[in-house]
Figure 1 (cartoon, rainbow over the protein chains, first blue to last red):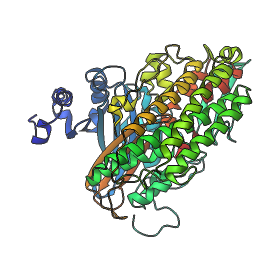
Figure 2 (cartoon, helix red, strand yellow):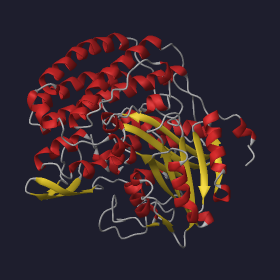
Figure 3 (cartoon, rainbow over the protein chains, first blue to last red):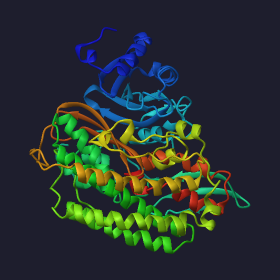
Length: 168
Length: 356
C-alpha cells in the first residue's frame, strides 16, 4: 500500500497500524487516516477475520460504538464498528473504525460477538435501528424500541417521523 | 422478579432477575422505556438546533453530552474555537461532573438506607448549580457548549464565588468520607460486593468509574486530551479491589480532582473572545467525525456522518450508561438480592442517557 501525502504526515503509531493493516492484503482498504482516527472498509465475508486481526495483531481490545447507517442512494447499509484500546499502552488515543457495507436487499452480516463480547448491546441496537441481521448473535430481540413497534426500522431514511413533512 | 420499570433509582428502566433463595441466578436488562429517538430527530435539525435536544438526553450531564457534538460539528465545519471558550468548556464540564457525582451520591446513600447522605449531597449540589447558573444562565439546561465556542462569557465575580465554594466543599468531602465512605455499615455492604475483574472490565468495554475501579487507569482526558487537559495537573483515581466500594471511592476522588482542574482553569484563563460567529444554518463539509470526551459517567462519543448540508446525515451517540449496561448482568448473577441496589447504583446507570 503506497502512502498518500496525507498519510505521510501521520504520527508514527498511526503509520505502524496502517502498515500492519496492509498485511491483510485485499481484505481491507484504508478509507481515511488522520491523527487519532483510522477507518478501514471491509466486505462482510472478511469482517470476522479482520476483527480477529484487529484484536490480536493491533491490540484493540474493546468495541466503543456500533453505528448503523442507511445509504439509500447506494442501496446499501453501513455498519461501522469503532474499536479502542485500554489494556495496552500507546494506542489509547487511537480509535480504529471498521466500516462494512451490505446491500439493503440482503442486510445480513456475521456478528463479531465471539471476537468482541463488548459488541453485544451495540449490535442489538444497530439491528433494530436499521433492520440488519447479525448472524450468530445469541439474542437480537427488542432493546430500545417498544415491544409492539410495528413499522420499518426507524433509522432507515425511508422512515419519516410522524408530523414532520419537510425534507430532512 | 421484575425490578422497575417505574424509576428504580433515576429514570425508567426495568431488569428482571431470577432468584434462587436470595441468590440471583439470572438477570435480563430491558432498557428502552425512555427511548426518545434523539438520533433520528437530529436528522431534521441544523447543528445548532440539535443542541437543546441532545442535552435532554442526560440532564445531570448536559455540558458533557453536547460538548463532543459541538467538537464533531467544529471538526466537520473546519473551525477552531478560541482558547477562552475551551477553558470555559472545561470549567463547565468539571462543574457538571461534580453535579452528576453529587446526584449519584445522594441516590447511593438512600439505596444503602443512609438518609443523611441523601439530603446533604442534594443540598451541596445547589452551590454548584448556582455556579453553573452564573455562567450558563439556567439551572440545568444551559445549552452552553455550542458549535463555535460557548454561548456567553463568565461574569467577573465568578472566580471569587467559585473559590469560596471549593474551600467549603473540600471540607464537606471530608465529612462525607467520615459519615458515609468510612462508615462501617457502608463498608460491610459494599466491600467485596459486585466484583468486576480487570480483564472482564476491559473485554466488556465498560467505561468511567466502573473501569477505573477495576484498576484500569483510563480517562479520555489523559488518553486523548481535548481542550487544555494536557496542560492540567490532576490524577486519575484507580482502585484494585474492583468492588462496589471501589466504584464509590472513584466518584469521591473525582470530585476533588474536578475542583483541582477548575482552580487551574480559573488561574490560566485569559481574556478574549468566547465564540466564533457561525450562521445558524452553518454548512458542514462532507465527511465523518468521531469525537469523544470524558463525561461524568465515562467516555462519551459522537459519530457523525455529514453529506455537506446544514443538517447532519447520521448522528450516533455512544453513551457511557449504555456501555456499562453490559456489566449489570455480569455483576448481579451470583450476588445476593439484598446487594442488588448497591451494585446497580454503583454503576451510575442513567436510563435516560442510555436510551437516548
